[in-house]
Image (cartoon, rainbow, N blue to C red; front, side):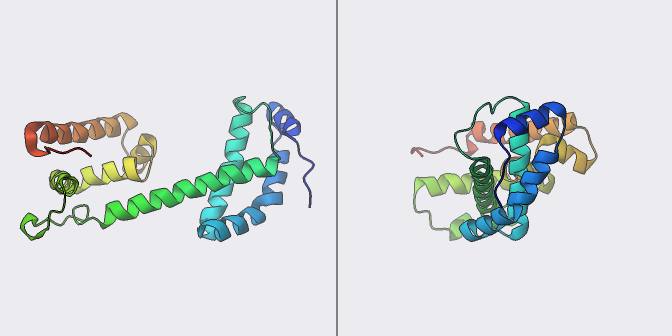
Length: 194
């Protein structure tokens, strides 16, 4: 099935508030993108479906905000490219999240520095940073993980905690200030370069 939907048609649809053209694009390419995403990235069907939906939303928002005035590829290529980058970012986040969560300190364990073989100054710096992190409460570590690793917005975190976005912003600020004091207080010092 071939799409007769052009950028101009999509621009008119956005201007008029008619979403049927986007619904048609969604129906036309969804299954093909999911197959493409699963085969190329190894992501799950659900992750690929989410990435495709985010790509359609990004297309809509780019047209609405007039960031997409002309297109040098097909609509399909544009959508698939956005979706592919969404999946690659997801893979990157999952990798960071996995590394972050698997670290002994994040799981609340302590580190025995005497049993570790310190191979380089960089390793020492990482171990010292981990020692600072262990002084954080699980709520503080969770806040940093959700914001920096899982890339959740302050609003999302606030909604889930049932507090204001300003309160979450203040908590994050306080945690970073606490970390900064420990770092500047000489606890996290090193002689080499990273």
